[in-house]
Structures are given as structure tokens and as C-alpha cells.
Image 1 (cartoon, helix red, strand yellow):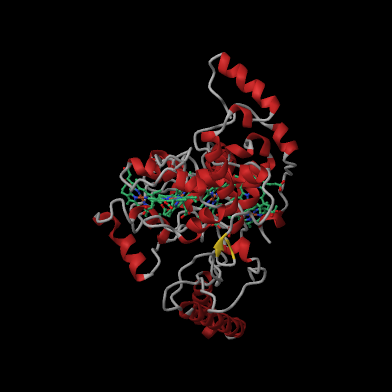
Image 2: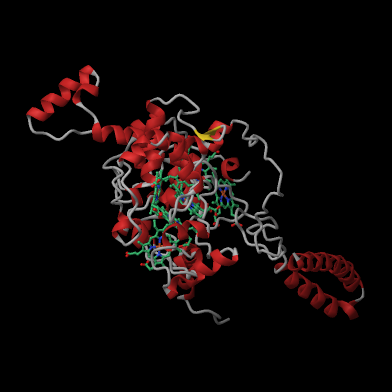
Length: 212
Length: 231
């Protein structure tokens, strides 16, 4: 009886069985990369806003403190988005007839809120709280990047679970003195494990910390 | 809401058809004739189910400040009905909450002013007031440089003589083109700012003899070595 398969098929079959493992792994890896790519996480994507509000001009240019607008960031889970009145404390006088600010004036006169497009939005099953992070010495810049250099807002980090956990496992690499929390251009020169002790920071990695 | 309801009914619908399909499949296995069509139905239902999930990413509840299509003003944050008082907001202490004693602007603070209060005042002042009034209160802030009306210097004789209740009142109700800051600065912090401004005013007219003894020698040596007075 003649052989159906050529002798070389022995090797080919072995290689392909072996190769399949790699193929599967590569596929999984590519899938994971795509899942974490800015395309999927929408990090680095600049959002259009009803008014082209620039943190670069207002924070870096004018030296405004985050808390002038995001008033509740120290006390509550939610950082707060400024009401139109906050803009009007200055723009009632400055650029008071610029077209670019027409929606702001319109909103102030008609008492209808400006509808900002959300840039950061965790899924509803994850719990996040600003106040605890600030109280334990984590700076805005560690999570939001150089906001003072953003002409329009984008998301600097993926906000994926592994990103949260990277820091929760090793807070010493990210913590800074409390008086530096709002500084955009200050970075600790070295690990501050002394602060982890001083602020009594725990490494919170149990699921119920964030999924409650 | 409407969309969600329809989504839920769709889910409910899909799961009942699945149950039907299940029994049909079993029936189909028994009678070979209807087997292929039941199988097709089963696959179609599965396909339908795969697009049917309760979206846990965006649950049917409002997040802070989320817009609402239900209320006429488009806000999910509801204003409290006139006359309601939130727990802990009875504001019984008129001195603390209005800056007045009787109808007169208060000339005293409603709580003791210590170092911590002044520090808090300094911090709040630099967040909310420096953009216009400047770090030292001369009215030379960044926003003024960009063309905002120049506020009077806080070191004017008139403002140096004004009672702390006056500063509290300006923050609470605004003054001229300056908007009020009542919604952004809590009453206690307004008093802290008033106290800090008083300290600022004092600093511009202070005599060396006003400083405590241990500071006097430090300031003296700094003067001799030509160093500026640091805080």
C-alpha cells in the first residue's frame, strides 16, 4: 500500500501542533494589545467641548489653582465641574463679547447648564473617590497627566483596572508631600516610602475596595 | 428611560423565546422533520441574546451632574424646594453665617483665631482671591494684568478700618463687578480669609517692636546681613 502522506508530514504536523500554541498566544497578545490600545481605552483622544476651554491658558497661563473651579475635589468623591457662574466671575469683564464665549453667556442668561463632554468616566461598577487620594498625597498629575499643558482635555491614562492596581500595589513610587498635590510640574526625585508610613497608606488590592 | 424599558422587555422577550426554542429543539430532536428549522431558530435566538446584556457599565442611575432628559431643565441635580433645610444647615448662628450681629457688621470673629485658621485662610485666599487681589493684596493679580477692573488695595485706610464682618460680607454677597463666592467658600473659610487679610494688613504696617522677642532678633540679623524677610 502506498503512503497517503509524504514523509515530511511528520515534521510538519509536529511543527504545526507546536506552532498552534504560539499562534494562540500571539492572537491573545494582539487581542490584549488592541484592548489596551488608545483606540479602545480612548486615552489620548482629545474631546470636542461646547466651548474650547483651555486648561493650558487658565492654569499655566493665569496660574489658577484647580480648586478655583473643581471646588469639591478635596472633600468628596466627585471633583466637581464648575458652574457657568464660575466662568462669569472673569468673563463678565474679560472677552465679554467674544464669539467663542457666546455659549457661556447664553447659558448664564438662560440658566441652562453647559453640557461638557465627559473625558474620564469609569464604568458604574467601579467606585472611585478623589478625596481619599488627595488626603493620602497622590497628586492630580499622577492620574491626569500635565493638565496645565492641555489646550483641550484628553485622558492621559487608560483607567483600566491594572492601572489602578499598579499604584495600589506600590503607592511608595507615586506618593508626594501633601502640599505638592496640586503642583503640575513638581515630581518627587525618589521613592517616598517615608511618606507611605507618615500618611499611613495601606496597599488596598481587595476586590471590594473598588467593586462595592 | 424609555430606551431602557424597551431593552428590558426585549431581554424578557428573548429569554421566553429561548425557553420555547429549547423545548422546540428537544421536540425537534424527536421528530427529525422539524429538526433543521428548530435548530435555526435556536441559533437565531442565541444570536439575539448575545446582543442582550444588562449594561453594567452604564447603570440606570444618575451620576453626579449627569444630564437628564426627564426634567425640563435638563439636570438630574434637583434644586431643593424653597423653605427646606438640609440636616445640619439650620444656620442658627447668625454671627457665623451672615457676618452680622443684629444688623451691624460684626467686629469680632465667631470662633477663636489661631495659627491653623490663619494657615487655612492663607491657602483659601491664594486659591480664590490672588488671581485678582494679588498675593499681598495690592490689587495686582494676574487677571487684573489681563484687563479686569483693578480692585482697591486691601491696604487702603478705609479697608484697614473695616470690621472682619465686612470682608465676610463682600465674599458672601459680592461687591460691584466682583461676583460673590458664597457657593464656593464655606462660611468658616470666609472668616479664615478675613482673619488672614487682617494679618496681611498688619504685615504692611508692622513695627519691629510688634514682633515677638525671639523673632525680633532673627529679623534684626536678617536686616544686618541684607537678607529679605522670609516667611
